[in-house]
Amino acid sequence: MINTVILESILTCPSCGYSQKETLPSDACLWFYECQGCHTLLKPKSGDCCVFCSYGNVPCPPIQLQQTFGGHAVLMLDSAY
Ligand SMILES: [Zn+2]
Image (cartoon, rainbow, N blue to C red; front, side, top):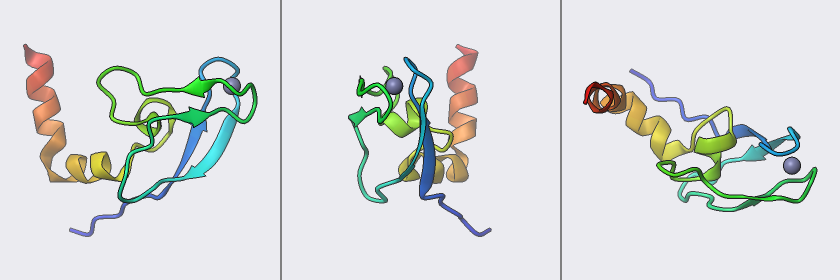
């Protein structure tokens, strides 16, 4: 199986709806992101590791890899409780 990690994500601001394409940092999580539309400082929702996981159409690379390696099974277990 070939793992493809997408390194571009479109962030959508929750307060003004502005969408901005951003390049994902491949080795770090982005905690804060300033919206280019309304300049709100976005922070990850609780349980998310970075703003891309909360507001992007593509989660950050570590999460993408986790999903490839069975992260879905873990998530399904969690929701069963
Ligand atoms: Zn905004």
